[in-house]
Image 1 (cartoon, rainbow, N blue to C red):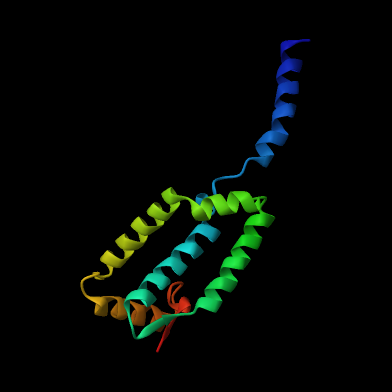
Image 2: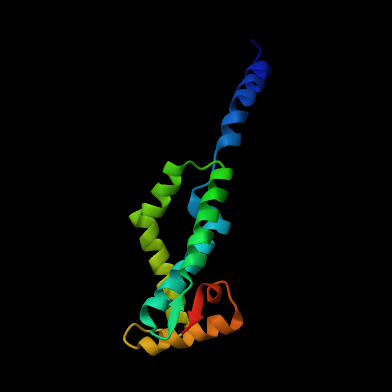
Length: 134
């Protein structure tokens, strides 16, 4: 077999494998970002007594994200591994704490969570849609 035919055959054999390759779920922004927003909203609702989380809305969105991930070719096992990963939880917590700090939130002063939460609700932001003032 000639060199050109060998390269062509190798290329054709590699195409299906390359087409099936999926990025890690953390790199699928439409999923990772939404989970990030829900996590921050949850943290705000946990520390601010005058704001509650819209838990049913968050649960509905999470089920939709799972469905979207399945449609993108991710198995339930891959999704569960991403959600349960200690490394991903640490990464998400680090990003969330940076966001909170950037907005003047401190764990020593729960009212700072309320101030940010009210601002997010007022703006109807990606985080604010998961919060409700009591």
